[in-house]
Structures are given as C-alpha cells and as structure tokens.
Image 1: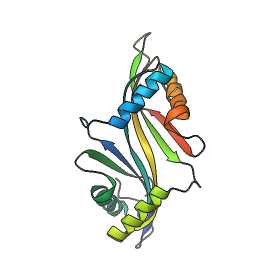
Image 2 (image 1 turned 90 degrees about the vertical axis):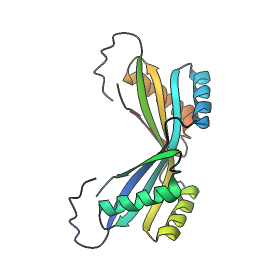
Image 3 (image 1 turned 90 degrees about the horizontal axis):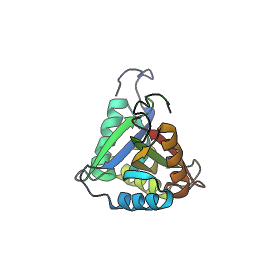
Length: 95
Length: 95
C-alpha cells in the first residue's frame, strides 16, 4: 500500500483492486482434491497438491488507496470470504 | 518465466504455481453482478464493477519452469478453464 500519488486533489479516485480468497492451511479442500485426481489421471503429471480459491476483481471509487483497501477488507469480512476458514488478500492495482 | 536457477542438476524440481482464471471481457458475469448489487446495498460504497474468477494453487514436480508452465497451460486448456469464455494466467512462484 502506498500513499503517494494522490494528485487528483479532493474527491474520489477510480481504482482497480484484486482480491484473492484462499482456504486456510489445514482446511480440507475437497474441490482441489478432486481436481488433483483428475489432472493426475489425464496427464500423468506429478501434481502434488491443488487448492482452489476465488479471484475477485473490483472497481471502486474512493478517496485514496488506504480508504479503498479498508472498504474492501470490510467487504471481505462481511461477504466475500468466510473469515473462519478462508484468508483474503486485497491488492490495489492502480492508485 | 526465467530459465536460470536450475541448480538441482537433472531430475525434477518441486514448484509452486498459481493460476488465475478470469472471464473474458464482454462475457456477462452474473455472479459478479449479484455481488456488486449486494455490496452496494450493504455499504453504500461506490462499487463500479465486480468480476469473479478462480484462483488455483498447484504444486507440481517438473524438470524446469518452462516444462511446468507448459504442463499447467495444457491443464488449463483441458480442465481448469473454458478457453471460449475465460482467460488464464500461469505464474510459477519459485523455480
């Protein structure tokens, strides 16, 4: 997170963010396991592990990167991720 | 993709890769639209757009990064993504 480049003065900036939601280590990933078995059967590749998460792209208008990150983290906690079983990572693409 | 650092000699290397699968631009994302409406209703945030994709972490044993990338791209074409409606990006995390 960088705080520079707020050159538009007051008002809102248009930002693109990506959110990655992944299962916490130790949580059984049944979908990932099924995919791993299928990949092994298809290709004979030596796949050790597959874990499947979500990738969410959001376009948001906020005052600055810090505010956008905070808003998106709130959304993760409330809707986009299950904080009990999942981790999430918010990245602002352009400030 | 870098080709250096193949210091283990012959044999296979253990690599972690991440695959991001996203809907192509122009393809209607009904799930993303539903999430956007919910976020707007919850928070009053000025969310402009939400698009939802998949994030897949794979651990694979291959001879080098180029071989691992090729194998993973083949898996995307065949199983992990729908090449008609989705783009995918393979990234090797550690060589």
